Structure formats: structure tokens, C-alpha cells
Image (cartoon, rainbow, N blue to C red; front, side):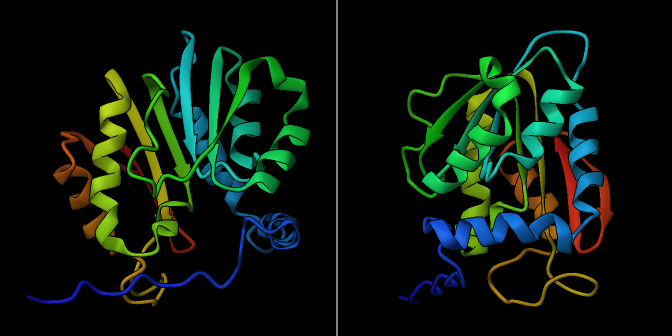
Length: 205
């Protein structure tokens, strides 16, 4: 019987106030193109009707802010395991507080979905690799699919492994592996919406 490969440790502790705030201060400054992903994700959501939306790994609310600005009929649940990140998101999203709720939990926990209800869309940006090993990716996608209403959308973006992307073996998936992980989780329609700067965004239904 073969041992499972070890998880890849994180270089920072996002549950620590100093680490979380340092990450938040640098993330968009170092990667200004992140805004293109935020806008593409927001614009992929149906603007014609109210939507209940879940964001996984919501961090300090960067993506949520764009979604809430561009989609006034959206209500969001922000899920993150870091109290400092939720505090920063609460500060950032104060103008939208009536449309936002917070879930302090980790999507690595087997029961993270419990009690959340169903959603019209699930969003995640640069967070799936925080599972800390790519073997957990398809099971996570399967859990997400179980939370979606009929016809719901999963907008998933993350770093890819390989040329032009990241090179940490075991942590990241290639673009093809990401597509197949979504299909293997039961999503029948998987479409790449944006691929640049080492990150790919998929729309899965």
C-alpha cells in the first residue's frame, strides 16, 4: 500500500493578523491584473434576477466588492477560515452589509457545506490551491456541485502548473487537469473564460 503524498505547507499563516494584513496590502499591488479576473467573474453572473452567491476563500473581500458593485441583485455568503480576513472584508464591504453574510469555516473540513443552503453561483479566485494538495481538488468541486441550484454556475479560477504558470509539484494542476477535475466532479459544461498571468478561470455548469 502506497503512502499518500504529503500536503504542501503554506509559507504564511493567514489566520495570523499580521500575515493576513500583509497579504491583503500586497496582493493587488503586486498583481494589478487581478481586477480583470474580478470583473470577468462578476460579469459572468446573470444581472437580470436576484442571485444567492457563495464565495470560497473570500479573503479581504476584493472579489466580493466588485461583484456587489456590478450586480446589485446579488446577495453573498463569504466563506473563509481566517478571522482577520473576515474583519477586513467587513470593513471593505460596509456599504453592502445588508447583502453580505460571513461563514467562518475552512473548505478543507469535510462538513464545511453543512447548513449553508443552496446557491445560484459559487465563486472562488486563487483559493483552491489552499487545499494544499491537488488530490483534494475534485472532491471539493463535487461538494460545490452539491450546493448549486439547478442551472447554477461555478466560477473557479486558480494558478495552473507548468509553462507560464507555477512550478510547485503537487500543489497546482495543469489547465487540462483543472478542466478534467471539474468534469470528473459532475459538471457537464466546462468553459474557460480567461487565461493569463498564470491563472485560468473556468465557468462550470
